[in-house]
Length: 322
Image (cartoon, rainbow, N blue to C red; front, side, top):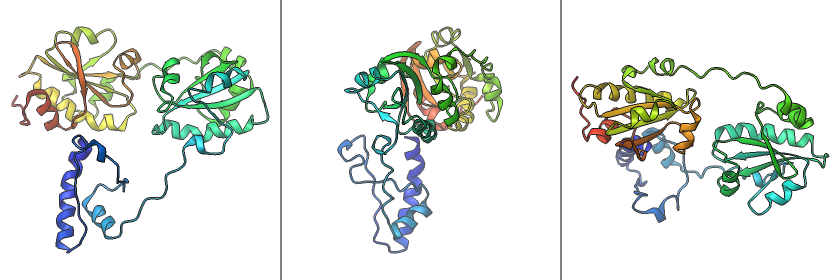
């Protein structure tokens, strides 16, 4: 875990500082991969990752405020569906909008209050329903309707899936759509903007980017297939973590280009090549997937720094001399 590696030196420093201050506080660590039964059992996240803040917390530890109740436990006009109830409930409604979401999803969190406010506008209309499905709990429903990302919003009529909701995720847009769904669905779709040029994304703050293979649906197999080893980064241009990962990924690609020509580092804009993202079950960004001899081998969950990537690909943390 990259975050764990970053935290370790801060924990060590905090432990030394507490000892110097003759504090009775103790800092300990558990390898959750070896002690899975203890993983999270006695803990809460204090949301601090620096030695200074850790010491400050341990001098006067306080439990965090109680978590916000789950959406399904809040009193709203949104009907929450589960695997036992969804078919019977949907069959009763002429117009039903269903948001498929995950509680951890940032875009879902932004959409929820707007969706809830729109639902309130129709609370006295028995023909209209705003509903939601938690895909972390009702996975079979989300699989049945081929939900690939969150939030996904779909329109149903009397239990039958009619179309995906493709308008904006604003209260006004939700209300406008559900006021006259047929009219909204028959509106001509706006022409989508062309996909971002991957070169423009990579050349910004990523020296060596020219050695990263820009992969797409038509080139993926021809480049990954002949390679002995390949590490592919699936990214979204708007993703902050992807932008942070670029420099090290491009640097390693540049270092290996002349000395390890059987190793490929590639990148896929998963927003432009959704078929590849779906094929390899990409759920978040960035996702790193490792291939051997052209075949999927595993997801890579190691650190994203140069040394981590070099250690993984060639078993050495030394910079490669070009």
